[in-house]
Image 1: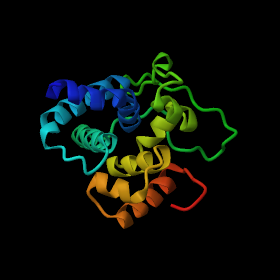
Image 2 (image 1 turned 90 degrees about the vertical axis):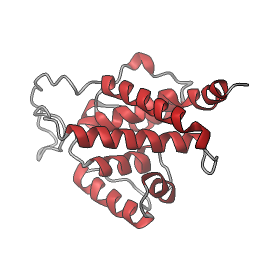
Image 3 (image 1 turned 90 degrees about the horizontal axis):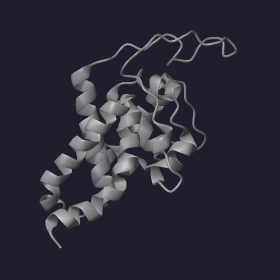
Image 4 (image 1 turned 180 degrees about the vertical axis):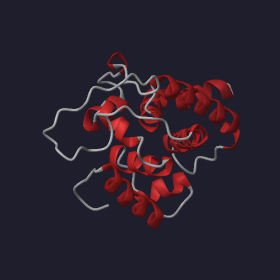
Length: 189
């Protein structure tokens, strides 16, 4: 087996769930596709140094999250249409008509299959445009922590390792992200 075949065999099954992860981070399906390509390029380049101290999935999520954080930091904040994003004062009030925002896109439902592990995650938390828009109000790091902890349900210690920080910083960031996004998850943080 060649290194290329080994790499493909180890990583290809995670492509679709990484696409969903990158989409949640950026709000743009097109940008998410580019970021997944960058993730796999970086993973391929560093595959010979992968020591297996974490799972291949965790290793790929670390790379994908860092690729997304870099892209978000380079791009700065993007404008959101009114009616999407932050919670309204009156939950009964209809949302305003949103103007066209090219980068904010719904995830193509044709790509979500029930056999795909990403689809299970997507069906549990939903890949809703309003959720993605609300995520854009968070800092890139808060967004990453919220997605990794609340959506993917990774343990705080694993998220801390993945982001190169402490468990305390992850838990603190998660509380701030939940508060700012207006989300509340039952159970311990």
